[in-house]
Every structure is written in structure tokens, then in C-alpha cells.
Length: 152
Image (cartoon, rainbow, N blue to C red; front, side, top):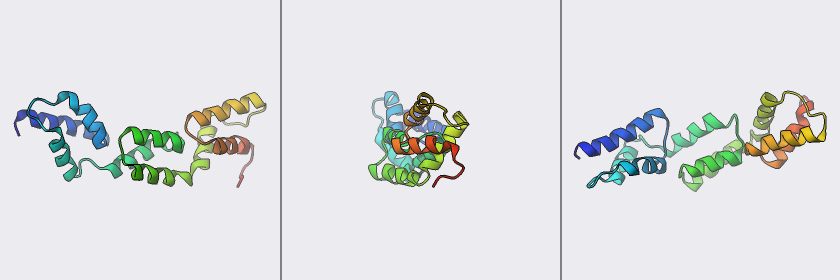
């Protein structure tokens, strides 16, 4: 491993120090910097073997950062775009399902604070939640239940 291989590893470690990255993200970001004779896969294998790259931590990081603002479908898209395995993505989305309505209501409350008084406003509030990845049913229940103190 010459100086350039260290610089590839150095770039990877710098990226990982900023936030968790999946192997696919690191590959995408480091590929333009690979010099002749360097083996990006070997560098990534080494980082993964040393637990610098962890699919579980990437999932956890995304859930911690995004679950308070986004619905399960948007989080699924983000996880998939990071090149994570289908099983890890599915488990993460399943983990979110139980709190989906509660999270949608919280996002709604922070944005709007009071129930819609007419159909146009209600539709606007639903679109707001739909764009953030909440399902139609959850968005409808969050907006309709907004005036209720504790809907089931």
C-alpha cells in the first residue's frame, strides 16, 4: 500500500468522520479518486472488516435524523439510495410502521398547529404529509384527528 492507497483510505475515513456512509456511498464518492494500481474494493473490505462501515449504523443514523420529519416511504427511498440491503431496509421500515400516525401528527402539529377549517386547507395539509412520505391513510387520519385530543 503506497501513499495513494492511504489517501483513498484517508478520504474514506474523513467521509466516515462526518456521518455514517454505506459501502455503496463510499464507492460512489471515492471512485473518481482511484489512481492506477489502487484497489478500492480492498480499501472498503478493510474498513468493513474493522467495522468502520456498518449497514446497521447507517440505518440507525438515517432513522435518528429523519424519522421525526419523514414518513416510512420517503425513508425507504433514502435507505435504498444508499445501496443498503433489501432486508435491512425492510426491517427499518417495519420498525417505523408502529409510530407512523404519531409521527405524522407531530409533523402536522409543528407545521400547522390547528385543524383545517375548509376542504382546500385540509387537502393542502394532506399533500404536505404525503410529500413527506406518509401514506394516504395516515395523512388523512392525522389531519382529521387533528381536532381530537386522543383518536385511537
